[in-house]
Length: 79
Image 1 (spheres, rainbow, N blue to C red):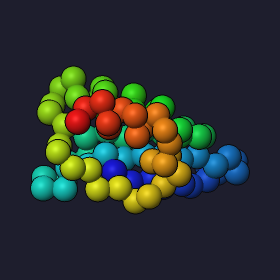
Image 2: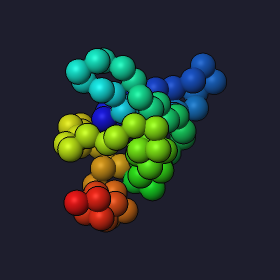
Image 3: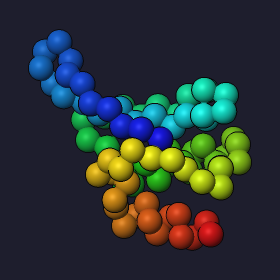
């Protein structure tokens, strides 16, 4: 799971969240928005869990979206 940011041609900044399977290099989910919060990350993971099993571990890039209580609570509930 990684986060990137960029800027459109008219100067508006946006964020991109990508959930990728590292063994197949397949991008499973890509979320784009001006702000991505922990709740959006949880929603993307819930949508992903409907079509395929979630992994036992997730490698992340320590973005601020991943330091949220919402994401922590969601992960704890899956334990």
